[in-house]
Length: 139
Image 1 (cartoon, one colour):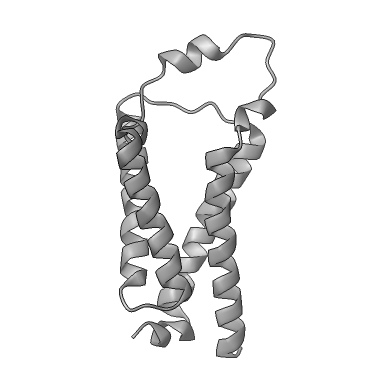
Image 2: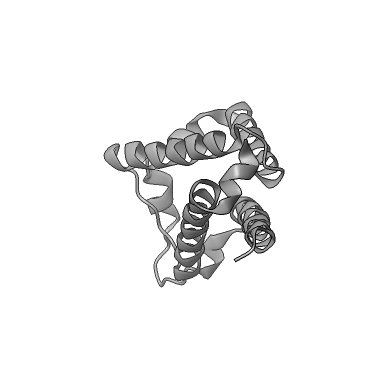
């Protein structure tokens, strides 16, 4: 396969994964959960995630790092792969800590599917950045 094809696939995945963040931020996935019970008391009793506990400034700071990582990856900047892996590991660590603190998620099937797709795309992006002919573009 040519490096141009790898580059187009890589950049398309970056754009798609970046745009998927905004789906989770601005679209209420709870609309897809149908239940005969009122689930709002259950949601109010759940533990606050570490991310939610950071406040608006922490969320903006993390969002700026995510935007920067995708922007840098898109243009093959030298340290972008490492920044992207660190952010991915940071979110993994936060999910692990939230789970140990007793946090839980109430997800619709559609939201679960979107999370799974986003996770797979992150893995594909990391694999292409490190193990494909594109790795030479980052030097």
